[in-house]
Length: 113
Image 1 (cartoon, rainbow, N blue to C red):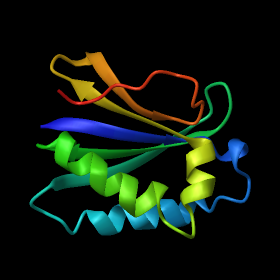
Image 2: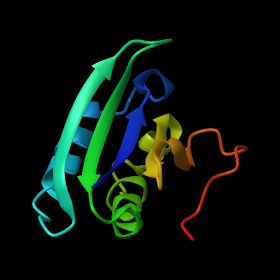
Image 3: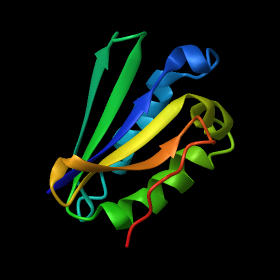
């Protein structure tokens, strides 16, 4: 099992309803064939953020669903796009993580092989 994490920085999009994002993510947990668990954690290192963590056996299948469900969502897509970073474990856990999305669109993103 591997983890995909959406880190949300609410100060980057003050109008973003983080509770709504968490609810949308938790609804996806109903897809038991793809998502084993969804958890959240808040922190304040260098400013407040919320991590939404998906435990899954198939990150390459989960990521397109999350892009559609959240980042292309007509109600929250623009806001979360300005406030999120998406990472996932690589073949060696977090030692070789992948950067799948970043609010700073000048950064180079990783892709699945």
